[in-house]
Length: 169
Image (tube, rainbow, N blue to C red; front, side):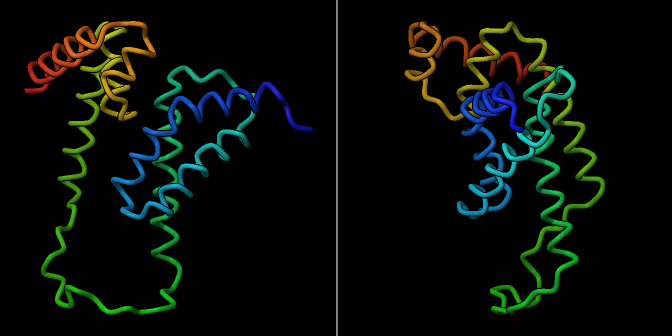
């Protein structure tokens, strides 16, 4: 039997993070249909999780699920044989820029520093920044959502960008 409270929580998460999760997948798979499917899989996984333990960092948890789905997808592609060969625009693999373990480690470190810097920001400017940069909402949409002026939203985004540049350089 399904739990209606769980369904409401998943629906809330879907509304809150749908744009950000979809944008996350689009940057990584470059196929809109596949990004749509992966976004739906995130919420299906959250629904299967049900009413488990309380999640401390909800946003982090949603994106951890998304990251795990991408890893599973990559693993499946490596283990499943390719059924159809369509040729290659780069037959000698000269255009491939392999991601070395060193670059992966640097990327993880940079990401961790960014998250830590973001978490030190005051709540409203951080929320404005996340809505703008990750959920791709316009200043006007954020202003309407939070009941603030568009000018205040612009000031918050500018202030956050300045603080992040300072802390990350």
